[in-house]
Image (cartoon, rainbow, N blue to C red):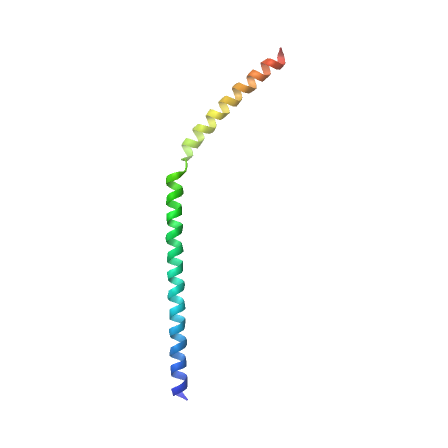
Length: 75
């Protein structure tokens, strides 16, 4: 009976080990890809301070346009 159980147990443990190793490798691969995406996003996109400056400039232009429209309406 042990002659049958031992090889089956070893096969099951080996199979679980292989599956665990593949899963671990896949998680590591995905983690590396996510890190690369984060780095690319950080290097390609605008910083928060630059965005705030651009929004401020657009707001100032909008205020000027609103003032001009108000002057036209008042006349």
